[in-house]
Image 1 (cartoon, rainbow, N blue to C red):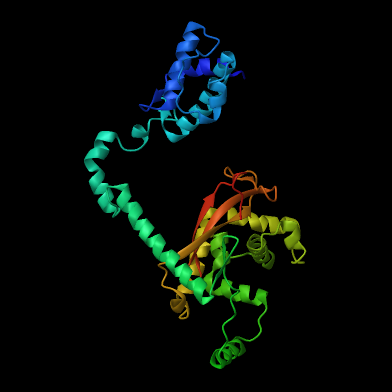
Image 2 (cartoon, rainbow, N blue to C red):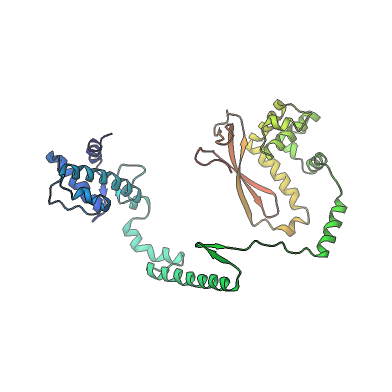
Length: 340
C-alpha cells in the first residue's frame, strides 16, 4: 500500500501522543501538509528525531524529503504505539498506559507504598548504585578466580574447566550394592502390575475395575505410549498382544482430565506413604515442564503438534520434590511455541 494514502487514513484515527514527542511533531506536520495539498517539504522545516533520515530530509529534492518524512513517520509511529507514547482511546491493543496500568494521579499518591512493598528506593540512581556495587563485587570475584587459575577468559568469554566426577566412597558402593541386591531383578510388566494393584491406577482411570486382561493391557499400552512420546503404531511394535488401534484407544482414555487427575492422585497418595519419600522432599517444592500428548482431533483444544503434525494437547506436568506428579495443566499448543 502507498505510504501517503496509508498515513491519510491513519490521521482519521485521532491518535493521542505524549507531550514533546518528536514523532508527534512529525505527525502534526504531515497532517498540516496534507490539508494544504502539499507535495514537497518546505525548505525551512525543522524535523526533530529521525536521525537516520537526515540526509534525505535536508536534501535539495524537497519532494523526496517529504517522502522520507512519511517513511520515517511510519517507522516512528510503529515504535510509538508499541512503547505507549501514542495511543487511541477506542483501541484494544494500543490503549493509553494510564488506562492499562495505574493512573498518574493515583500513582503519585500511592507510589511510596508500592516502592516500599518491593523494597525499592524512589530514585532510580540509588537502585542503580546498589546494582553497580554488587556488579563490582562479582567482578572482583571473577578477577580473583582468574588469578587462582579456576577460570579463564578467552575472546571475551568466561571458560570453566571441565568438572571432574567426585570419587565414590567405598561405603556408598557397599550400600548401593546391598540395596540392589535386596531389590533384585524385576521386569517392567511385573512392576506395573504390582504398582497398579497397590494404588488402583487403572480402576481410577477406567472409573471401574478392568473387565478383561485385554482391557488392562490397553490401559498400560496407552500409558506407555504417552510416557515414551511414541505414536500408537510404534508402541504396538513393542507390545505384541495389542494392535495399533487398541493402543490408540488406550491413549484416548487419558483425554478425560478428571479420571487422569484421580489416577495420578492415587499414585501420589501411595507414594507419600513410602518412608524413603520423606527423605527426598516434603512436598513444598515442585518443578514443571511441558510435554505433548496425542489426542483425538475432536477435542476442542487440540492443535497440530508443530514437530510431529498430529492432533495434540500440551500438558504442564508438575513433579513434586518427592517425585510424584501432583498436578498437570493442559495448554493449547501453538505453532510459535511448540513442545519441548
